[in-house]
Length: 238
Image 1 (cartoon, rainbow, N blue to C red):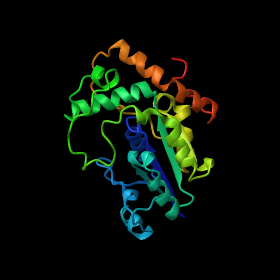
Image 2 (cartoon, rainbow, N blue to C red):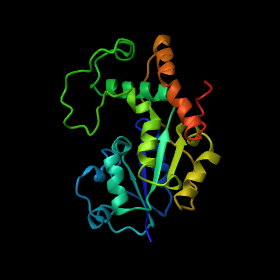
Image 3 (tube, rainbow, N blue to C red):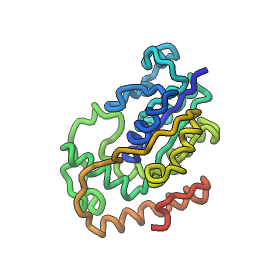
Image 4 (cartoon, helix red, strand yellow):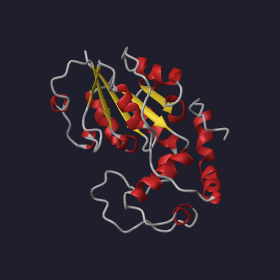
């Protein structure tokens, strides 16, 4: 009996690091490549046979796919549910201020973003006029991706809460007692040694006004995570 596990996002929240660590477990079969992601469930027509064949002839009982676009696309969640109603869904979160900055610098360093931090976050200058047809989501949507409560709720509308695991980068990358329960939760029994860098994107000094604005912007949503979803964001008291 196979177990299907999906790491659905969010972007710049340590999903690649987590995926690589979990793939070290002998019972885990990872859908490759992880970059660029396969994103099978963005297709309108999906089939069990076609999806299983993507993993090849592998013996492990846990099939793991990472696709950070899925968190923004509940239609993908519905397609997952149609084939794998018992699927396990992992949502990775991160301090939304740091996530937004990491997302910005990733786009800037890869030549997509031409605006300054101040133009993006303080002045709301329109995004660069480039074709986004090759992207499954808006590459400039830095702010919205940190409003986590709406993404969590969209998947809770599809899957029972016991099939969702919500974790925080600040915990699972630094504390083995936070990482190893993830291994157990997916049904694996090999606990790899934590290693490697997380979201290693070049970052310059950030204007304190930008930091202040972002903290204010995300305060309401962070409180929702605490009060509505009974979560304990490690960044809440910063």
